[in-house]
Amino acid sequence: MKPGFLSKNPSVLVFLLVLAAFTLGVTLMSEAYGAGVVSTSFVKTLGKTLCLCLIAIAMDLIWGYTGILSLGHFAFFGLGGYMIGMWLMYARTREIVLGSQGALPPTPQELQDAIATQIFGVVGTSELPAIWSFAGSLPAQLALVVLVPGLLALIFGWLAFRSRVTGVYLSILTQAMTLALSLYLFQNESGLRGNNGLSGLQNIPGVAADQDHLSIWFLWASAGMLAAGYMLAAFVTSGKFGSVMRGIRDDEARVRFLGYSVESYKLFIFTLTAVIAAIAGALYYPQAGIINPGEMAPIASIYLAVWVAIGGRGRLYGAVVGAAFVSLVSTWFTGGRAPDLNLGFYTVKWVDWWQVLLGLSFVLVTLLAPKGLAGLVDLVQGLRHPNRGGDPMGPGDGSLREEEAVE
Image 1 (cartoon, helix red, strand yellow):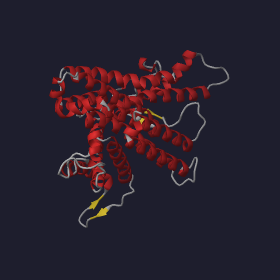
Image 2 (cartoon, rainbow, N blue to C red; image 1 turned 135 degrees about the horizontal axis):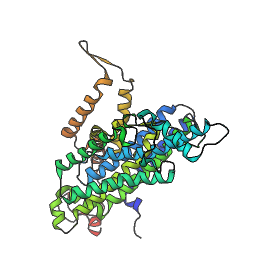
Image 3 (cartoon, rainbow, N blue to C red; image 1 turned 30 degrees about the horizontal axis):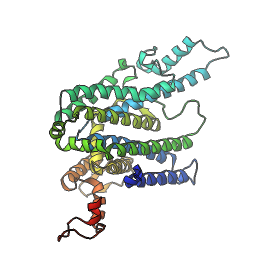
Image 4 (tube, rainbow, N blue to C red; image 1 turned 60 degrees about the horizontal axis):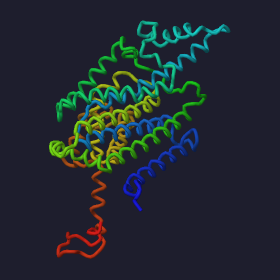
């Protein structure tokens, strides 16, 4: 009988069990369904952290497994947030406008004009841009969460990979794409409220639920999508496709010489990871409550690479550990919870020095522990004697064993 996917990838089952236990534990300790030990604000922080873990998996697929250091994946993350944010803001504003009307209901045109004035009055206009044509339809905006970032990645990737741009030049191109998109969205003419961004995204229109329950629901959705993304990534990297990905990372010229269409593999992974990043963003920003162009600045994509490097690139669980570790530690430092360090001649305020500490951590991990936090797993496994069944077929300790020869 041919072994199943989970039996061939036991680490996936372990990850799913840990994620399920974590989600259940937070639920039972939440203010909505449990003892109230974990506050609603911290539940939101944990939900956003799971979304960051999902985009870290996407980054690990494109960088750790395929060798493409993309510095633009947070642009796709932000686009996913903008797409769902348009519906959230439109539907919420629609409820507000209808609730403020008198006994005589407004005509469809009057309703649309009132919604447009409410949303875009802050940027000096009262017209609804064409890109908001589907903002009133949840199914349409959910489709755009996937289609817009996916199409952008497909076009950009086709142009870049067709020209065989590689290495640092490709990284610069992806960063330039992110910067150009961010600068465009800062303009009021972009149709997405410029620097003001989209706000009030923390409520689901038409759903009568408080933030205590909504935070748990988003935590469940984030955990479920992280589980699905992890299994998809494990499936992609475990078979022949994954072997080709690693081959492209290690020796692209040889893989091309063997007859594989390297550009097609790269384009598929680039587009797939862009879609994964967009889905993560669509779950992240309703929990954050606001999105603006500053979220898509190139520095955010650099942070993403740092998370994966600290966790251990080339390992899916390493990307998750790295993103979760840096996100939670960053929240602790920047939230004012870390006590100031008095050196006598100078007081270190971690709110100001956290980014320096993060950069230093990246340098130290790169130089001293290139496998990242995931390398601790290797350290533990190295302390155990490998179970190599059967009698040795040669004189040396490293000689082939009978059961290995059968396999």
